[in-house]
Image: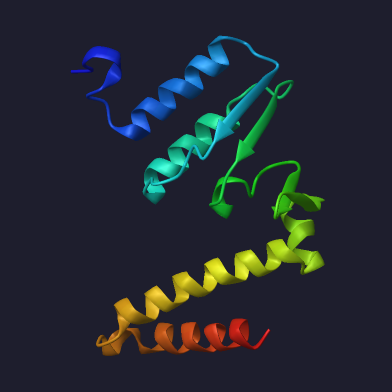
Length: 142
């Protein structure tokens, strides 16, 4: 049951409907503001697939704090204190080792630390834990 104004729909479903409306209304420019914020990885992936289904002759502006939400973009503009400090695609931004590289490294560090925490106490996962710890150290040394 959808409910009045979609109230009974989960947030991920409401977002997917909003994207679909944006596509059906045929705008030249679509703005997505924190469209994947607060979603689990499965719902985030579904939303990203919907966004990628936009016709290629459209301009999509995606505002995001989650780096995974923008990594497939043609152009990423990195803002720092309201100023554009980097502009490039994801791969080029990482290669330049600027602010976006630092942000990706911080995000990766958080995931690796979580893996170590979850895997601790499981002897069969020692090789994964050791690898994650080495990578954590490399990221911290940079």
